[in-house]
Length: 180
Image (cartoon, rainbow, N blue to C red; front, side, top):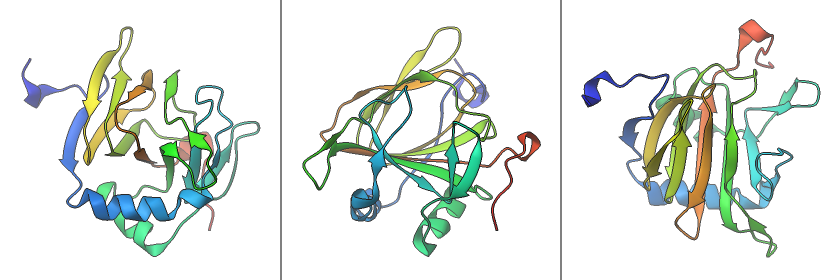
């Protein structure tokens, strides 16, 4: 297959690599104490932190998520205009709890536009596609783009620790507007 003709809607597309993954990993480590148990039925045992905005899936309401200037600057370099994100973790937390960074096959909720940009720290197997999935090895520092309305999952984590940061734009056509 000619890699220059990848279809955004059906294949994962590697954009670039984090210049210094250790610096970003240290930053993510500093946020571990703020991670909370994920309520998603698709991600049992996973801990996460909403970035910029948080969505309550029960009623679709938005509240403010975690943000700082360093995160804003990084997100806008990776995905200009993004206004919502999610930091997830696989490994030992500071209180001796363990976070399982996997998530079963799903499509992202209507809060997000289809384009998602994922920043991977560690190694994992990402499954993506419809009607059948293709497995992709996400390597340390990979920044990828995919259509989050296509079935996708993180089915295996290879490294003892992994952080994932996914950025989206809020789907204003579905009523999700950034909070001021």
